[in-house]
Image (cartoon, rainbow, N blue to C red; front, side, top):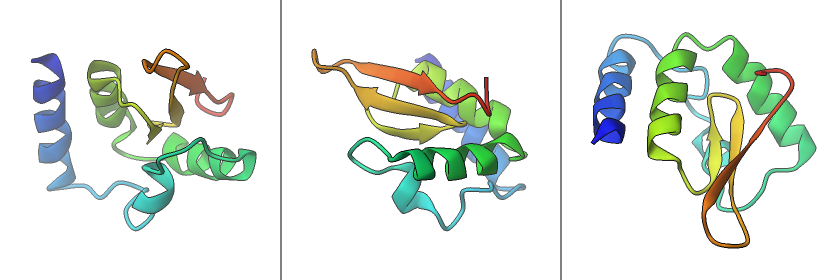
Length: 91
């Protein structure tokens, strides 16, 4: 239920403010792990995004299986559970 509420908050914020990742969805939501250049590029976009907080709150609640959310790369673990890898740019 918390993920739904955080998604609603993020969606409402996006109606008034465009995220820095707009137009880059393919690299933020890739199905596999990102290479270091992609992680660095996305972290730089995220750290100045006006929706960083809302995006991060949603990601922490939803625990996405893969992708980069609020500068954090989420990956599937060997057990199939999501895990996150925080970059030093967003730490």
